[in-house]
Length: 268
Ligand code: LIP
Image 1 (cartoon, helix red, strand yellow):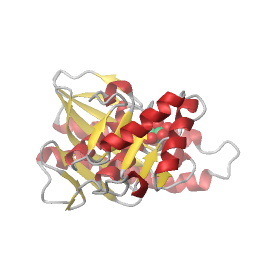
Image 2: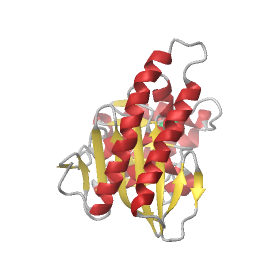
Image 3: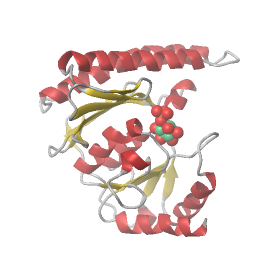
Image 4: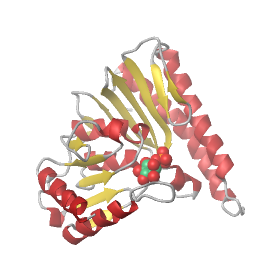
């Protein structure tokens, strides 16, 4: 673990890694359960809930008054109304369920409606991304910077594809159409927290997705901002957590990428 970690980040990283160890064990089991007709759905729900319980217990030990926004457990009010944790114990559940090793634990601390600290941890690769507001974003021990590319034609973008039960299919198809025509490529890996972490790390130049939850993105949003990126909702506002929509990229591409997505909106 990095010696740059503040006390609060140390607690968050420990909680994420402890939950990550449990998920890693359960993921091994999921791979065995794939052969069942029904698949490992119930088992995965239990793994998810168990990971969430581990994180909540670890955080409560050190900050008993803070509230929670949990993917599984919903909103839990704390006696401290300024601080709350926003947690996705298993971001990329569908990947996990299908034995695809791309998922993460995402833990964010929100203070007075602003994300203050963030951890995104992939327990399979042991990739640890973290940040504290004003202190930069890090991957293991290295400082993160968003990509320096400034031309859409040389850039790759990640996204999330809506599926059964999620709205916006037509809208998405149009976005895909305009972005694939102008960019160097599109990726869909299935975990928003890691998509944002990858933008922060300059692995791809941008990411966009609609209809995701606050726990999918809270930690990743801070990573992008602290790595020098720009992240807003589809209307250019700092209201991603409320609207569930995100556009993340670097300062050089931001206007062009936004224009491109707007072009799609006009087609639909
Ligand atoms: C997932 C997101 C992903 C999105 C999936 C899903 P979950 O979160 O991280 O970006 O495309 O539909 O919402 O459900 O695995 O925590």
